[in-house]
Image 1 (tube, one colour):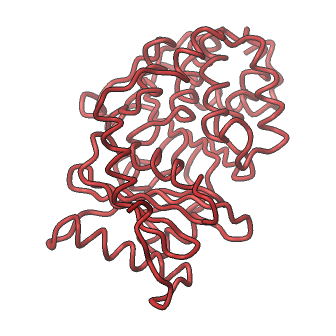
Image 2 (image 1 turned 45 degrees about the vertical axis):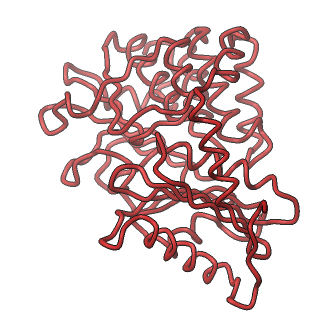
Length: 339
């Protein structure tokens, strides 16, 4: 740490992680590229600056083809959280998520040492030793890029590639909720990124079931005025719901797209909008509950447990409540997306 500005954010981060206590880096349960890039970069910083290893843990699965390719081509190792003791003498760093949220596996009675996130703060987290929350940033990877710059470490190729892709995926190539900080970070990273590996990640091969899921999503989608909603059957991985919501938002003349799908005992919900005056995260919290959803102005996600009536009935209630919150009443005709 001798070459690091002692007043910088990264210096403060490293100070709280010094010493022999092991470090577990915990992104949200089904980590996306932004979360994976942040976890890999934090481990790199700790290893290079403190000569200390860390474990990246996941509570769910990495299912999306691009995300699995990211693990493969960038050598990001991640372990099931069930194999790790989070209650012992260990530092826990949450990245791209926050304490008390339903999308991570941090025990409810455990206070993390570090929280780094770009989502709106859902509480004050006064007891967290290192807290860096920047909801005005488009990606948490932008924060970690600034740490990398402050550390004066080499922008190692795989780390740069991960961060660049994390920013690109989270902001849809800097076209959604990006800020000058995100653009500056991407410009810094691009010369160091491995373009061949990046292409393999962005164009990851997908199984036949992937196309079947999109067929089902299109066939089950209904248009309700300025909103399109699709209720999928059981999905193979939670991120499929977000992929469908992004895809449906391309529909002409709609401002809101929602995809709902069952994974295990939970109903996964993703909401997207082109509206800039309404916060999608706030909307979905009103539908699913404050503890079950979150997001930004234009993107939101959440999950609720399937109730006793089954997934179809639960999804129908979510759809009805969403349309009500959006101000789309029963007088608005609904029609299939395709006939």
